[in-house]
Length: 411
Ligand SMILES: [Zn+2]
Image 1: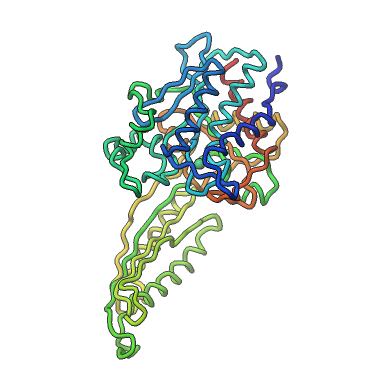
Image 2: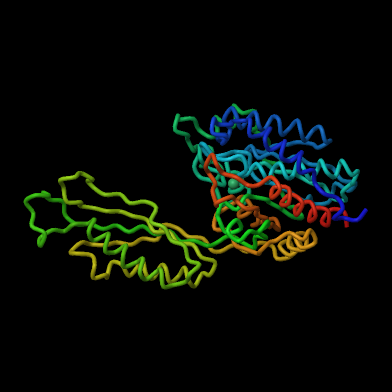
């Protein structure tokens, strides 16, 4: 049988996505399915049933990551893994994460429909607590798999009701053995919504994701003097907020000249004491920046670290600290090329791109060759109830994954 004549059943994929959206569907047609919540457990239970119906064996590891494996005629071979996450943020959408998992399901259903027997096992992975919306941090399941996160520390992570991840995992029924963890695999493929506007703006159908943007996050602390807002003359004030405004303006001017693809954000700004009739004594704000070129991120850091010497600091003291950063991750070149070939043979409109958001594939790629495919987010919206990806684009994304899985498992 010629490979690309096999295609996934778009209607069934749509129906299954809507079935899963019922696990936590909000009244505005979004989804709240926090990790290991009642709704997440129901979704997991149903996912398990769907996989077992296809003759797959389902296991879970000590972080609650689920693996459904379709056996092959040679089970000693390393599997091809298709995966993402079933959890969502509070009032999130119907596509983020779940699309990647259900694409795995749809790919296996398609192979069964066409009676195609893969030569290597195919595993669908549902990775626990990607969003970090209930238990901090995000990418928890994949972070422990890669060794980036300390498991003991993760188990103690607590939700806002005071429930630990450990207790939630034990109560869920999805606490499995460490030996079940995802080990070496031939490939890890993740289909995800873009969560940005690029594909939608350019009327493209597919993004072949080459990597994930590097980032740097710094904290700037400006210290002045608090005093009476009515009696202190302007000339003698040490107003930390006024100084912070000058510093931000200066940084913004310099950053905007660096590179058009640089994105930067002041996501947090705390003012103390934050009282209307008191001159602010201290302002602490964060600046994070993302770019694929590490040289550009170095320049960002230099600009931020020069802020304490700035003329705009108005008698205040300024301290800049680097909180954390990560280098741009490049996915497995061979897999990226295969996904691109699969896209081209289907004649979809696409571009190669780098993701600004982090995904499970980021950590998994540390020990398994990995790559991702994006489908457009209408108006770039995500983590919102009106998050939308057109059904036909979901179908196209799944077909790209199918094409690649076929070439990895049947040749
Ligand atoms: Zn996601």
